[in-house]
Image 1: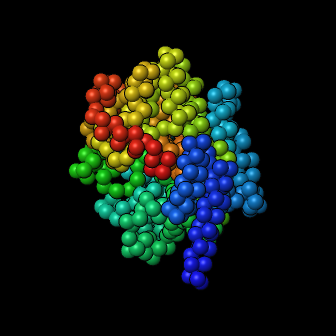
Image 2 (image 1 turned 90 degrees about the horizontal axis):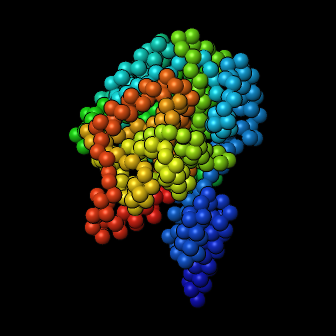
Image 3 (image 1 turned 90 degrees about the vertical axis):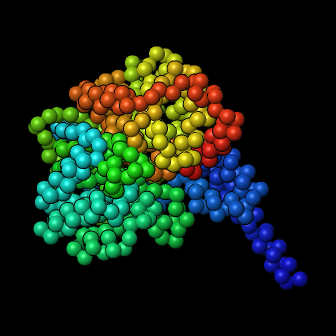
Length: 473
């Protein structure tokens, strides 16, 4: 009797927890499809759905929200000083399209910047390592993936040399993306006085199950004056030295000028979440006179009040009048982005999408086949990159603006990952990006509707099933 009573109580508590979780999903899920899926699962299959929901289903990273400064006076005071100092370098955003980007970024557009486009691995890592060697005061560096391979060893060596000459080094990595990074690598860094931390998305008992939130940012800041952001992680495959992927196609960006403080602020907040420390950094902007380009830094993530990354992409598509080109290795956009792409093509915008030919994540690769037919029928042009794996995250709008960053066109980047994008409303930079993408198109094949229609029934079924799983990919 006692055993049966305990079993009954346990069953009741599981179903009660499922019901409570379903209410939370109803009140907090960011999409109606997600809310319905979770509610049905939590009520009918609570034994499996409850743990899955508390690991994968949380819509916002509430711990980071408080760390961001909504209730932290120290961070608020430092941010206020930064915003006052950057005021003389704020560009006049008379264009409503730029004002919308600023509102999404919660950061101003700054003038007096110089942006250097870095194409592929050798150029990017030569620039990154040269920046580390030039550091005099501090280095802030974070990557989603860091591997203990030949490239990782080169990075470690540069950071150790910087620390040895008295430069403060703060090294942040994502514990899930860098799950294969061994303790020896980290001990070698800390033994040289380098401050090292995982992002710690599950830090503290209240956040123990928040394993699905990841820090996907790739940022390097040197002395608050030079910054790098883009698609590259640290591993030899990013240099094209992995036969599985072949030549690796990626894009990074080097920035100098006041915009670097936007990258610095994003790292500073991430470091505060991960460690509880408030870093003492330089917040006085340094204007570059070599060129003067306007830049908006757009951090995004699951602590935002709104879906910053998805809205940024939708805004870019809606603002395009003649041309919208975008590249993304993982192309499973939400319904809003899909609709915006189709509508842009219908009104005569040259909409082109470059995605990889070779799959990296199979489910993501298969998912795209479920909605690409509708894209093609609307006039969207879709290209598959042939030589190797394409990993860059770049947008071009009307030859007047472009962006480089870490955001993929999928649910994870839109809602679950911390990301960062540099948006440049600058014709000269846009012209550079156009030339780069035209070279990429020359290495692509265009997909037509017949190719998709001729797939076997089982392939269509698998693609549709993969698409339904896209919210947690």
